[in-house]
Amino acid sequence: TAATKLGNFVSCPIEALGQTMAPYVGQNMGAGKPKRIGKGLLAASVMGFGVSAVLFVIVLLFGKPMTLLFLSAKEVKAVKYAYQYMIVTTAGYSLLTLVNTVRFTIQGMGYSAIAILAGAARTLAGTLVVSMIGFMGVCMANDLAWIFADAFLIPVFFVLYRRAKKKYQ
View 1 (spheres, helix red, strand yellow):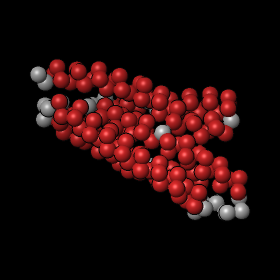
View 2 (spheres, one colour):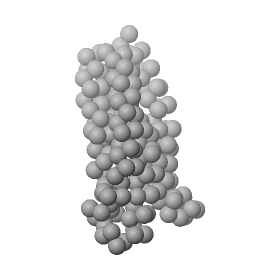
View 3 (cartoon, rainbow, N blue to C red):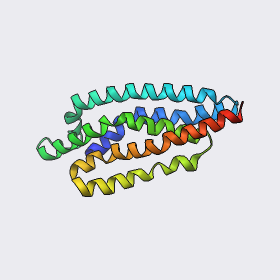
View 4 (cartoon, rainbow, N blue to C red):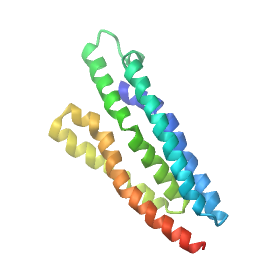
């Protein structure tokens, strides 16, 4: 729980970056300029990858002290597990960057229902992996969910992007 709370806080820049994509894309679709969408998605993703790297270094260096905001230093095992969870999860933030930027891009293109389908991967990853490998499965559940979501969202984006470019030629 402590690691999840910290992760929610630490990932705010990535979440915000993703959320900027929907209005950006919607404005460009409305203006009939879908070619800007690809450039914007690339720029946001590259920026997110940089932010992800910085956040990973911050968690690597300061993750244990950060857990002490929610845990007592006497809870050695809990601190160890929270830190392990944070390291594994933060290592996957580049995957989260793509989930957020691509999902919100698809939403901005007017396909909200499709974007929502990517969330089903989290349940699948969490249920299967945790039962198979225990706590490391808990640590890896987000990263695996992001891989599954990206594997769905990225091809869908390219199909919808080609369709949008044809529509406005």
